[in-house]
Length: 311
Image 1 (cartoon, helix red, strand yellow):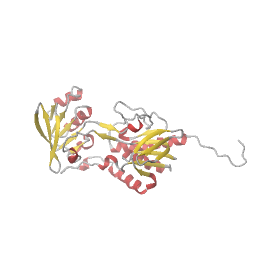
Image 2: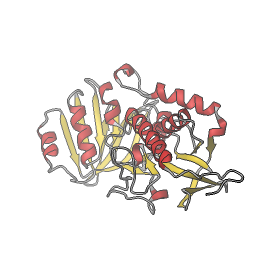
Image 3: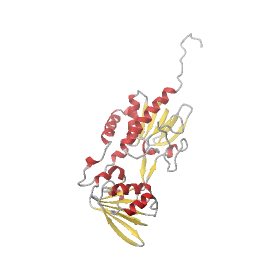
């Protein structure tokens, strides 16, 4: 039995695993890849990437270390998790079962896709899924944001501070009547296109145009970058029967990354922690590992009886 099992090899899971190793815990990382979201980087011509605060260097160091320590990782997908009398049982797609006294879930979240022609071809090549990460790259450039809920409105508002223009493509009226929506309506460099159906992404080496349809007519929107801000889907389904989730399906945690189930911790984008950022996920992973370590220290220890000793 392992002291700790970590699920997910993104920034939070990698950090948690390295911290657990430093604490001399018998830890196992189960993941389908190493690096998570850092494996997808925005590529654009003529942009100043030094303007973005990155955690990739830290994550890459952890990746290199985990690749070397093959005893501490299993490259597999998790199919099921159950609570046991001694902790947790994790079953994988390859047919193996692993037991751990404590568990850290760092399975991340997936961006909601447009599901239109051209999206896969231009993903992270002019088609971006995180304005909060990349907005500083677009000073005095023309940008477009796709979405109609709070996440999209915040992205448009941030871009409006630095970009020459922002086109907000809103499939529905969404949250446009909110204070932030009214602020965007009043911004001189923001154009709101409401009630549009997304049809296709076009470009050359990079995405250059987005084709939309409104009232039966097709329109082509040109921009230097397109930000898809339709929200995130947390990968929390594996533990939905074990922990409390919020309305969005994120795992609820406290300030020390405890979930509603003792011994089960969570970190990163799968939780309700604020802001989906690499550096924040790194910190959350470290906290989760330290909390798990503290939990393991509190578990009762079996007292071995020496030969001839009476109890």
